[in-house]
Structure formats: structure tokens, C-alpha cells
View 1 (cartoon, one colour):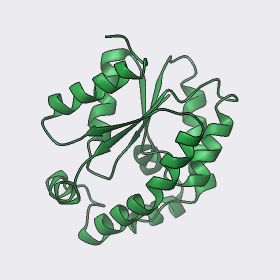
View 2 (cartoon, rainbow, N blue to C red):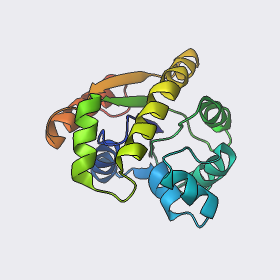
View 3 (cartoon, rainbow, N blue to C red):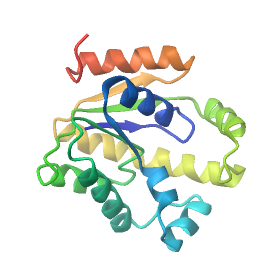
Length: 183
């Protein structure tokens, strides 16, 4: 598995979809899986910009991973979002017959994120929701990265500013450097 981290608007979905198409991998967006959920509690939490109940999210992610058992490599976009989810994912790797090969962190300055989200114009991209999401991302991400590194999982910070192609080239270079793909 390749995990994609970055704030909302960093380009995780764009880059994940390009990689999935290019390499025949499966892209799993935690945000899209949650938006597609029939659970009203999840929808209300998302509307407020808050994180959904971790156990429910873990269950949705586990089901998506299991449905993709025939796919060689999965891209998890935007998951885990909490330390306990990272612990669950690491502990359940063997159960899912998957290992985390690399964590790609798309680094994008806050001002650029706000600009991108204003252009994207999704219904849940209100100013207050964006501020809430960025605050959660900033407070939760470092403990998750520290935990993953403590488990000897490779982390690559990639500059997420530039054209889609420029960022993609940097992501591909990180995948090559981590031996996820060959050059």
C-alpha cells in the first residue's frame, strides 16, 4: 500500500488517480468512501468539517481493502487521519495481506491550499470547514508520521506546489527511491 497524506486541496486525489491509472493500482479515497456511505452520522460530521467516528471509518476502509484483494497495490488517500487509525492499519496489515510500502506527504503551504479549495468549489469547502480541516490535519499528522516511522515505514515529503505534471514527476521519483516502482 501507498498512503497519501496532505491537507485538503493538496492534490492527493489527483496524484492518486494518475498513479492508479498509470500502474494498474486501486485508488481508495477515504473522503469519497465516506461521502458514498449511507451513514447519516458520518455525513453530519463531514458537513461540520469534523472527523468521523474512527471505528466506522476503519470498517469502511477494511471493506474497501478487502474488495480490492486482487489488486497488487492500493493507494490510500487521506487515511489514516488519527493515530489510533494508523495503529489499526499497521496492526491489520497482515490480516489484509498488505504492507505499507511508502507514505507520500504532499507538502503545500496553507495559503495555496485555501486558494485551491476556493477554486475546487465542493459543497463542503466553506471557509469554516476549511479552517477546521486544516487545524485537524496540522494537529494530528505529526504523531501519525512519527508512529509510522517508528514502525520502519518509509515516508517521503514531496513538494506539492507546481503543475500536476511537475508534482507527479516528484511523486514518481519518491516511489522509485523507495523501491515501490522501478525507474
